[in-house]
Length: 69
Image (cartoon, rainbow, N blue to C red; front, side):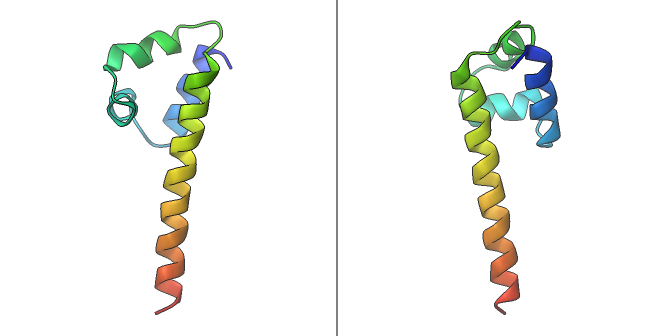
């Protein structure tokens, strides 16, 4: 994944660069460096995928909880 693709993927989650950095426990500039990379290290791609999965799971739990009422 290129840095530009990574940047677009984070934006598609609705998070800002700063919000994603906070979720990852790093400085915003660390994420900004990934945006400039020709190839983003797999660690960062997997971290984003995991965060997306957690957010989706929480939404599903919320939807199901409302349906059960």
